Image (cartoon, rainbow, N blue to C red; front, side, top):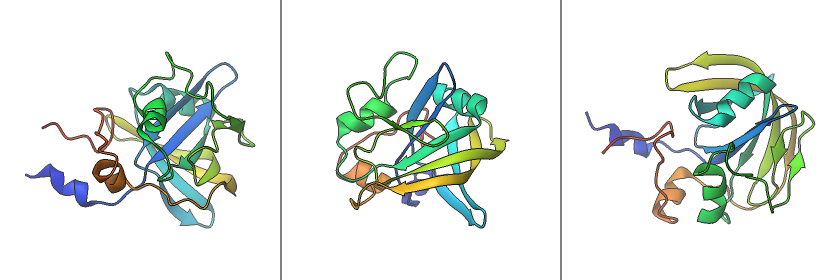
Length: 168
């Protein structure tokens, strides 16, 4: 089987973040998707080894922000290649909070969705969170970044915790 056929699927890159009273997590995912329009729901898929996954479970809500094409590799690396337990991902950049209390940055993001978790599904290495959108705001008219753009233009790599990671 040629699992690289899945590279032909189109998806974007997103920062998903969540906060509890005493903790927060944020990471890059390529699995944000609108599910329904009534009620307005989205899903995110997060590796269970990511600190952010546990924070979303505990908090019961999350913020979802599509990354724009003006993001560079240091921005993506800040959220995608470091752990929230050892690095302050919002340190030194503008940080805001959603109405549910989740952190996000307006830098290099097209919009922000504040979502309350309404369903979860354990799919082995990852957890699917279905979130009902409680608030949304457009932050930029910049073009959202696709995963194809990340690979072809920025020459980005797929980290082992990504849902699209395939061992070579």
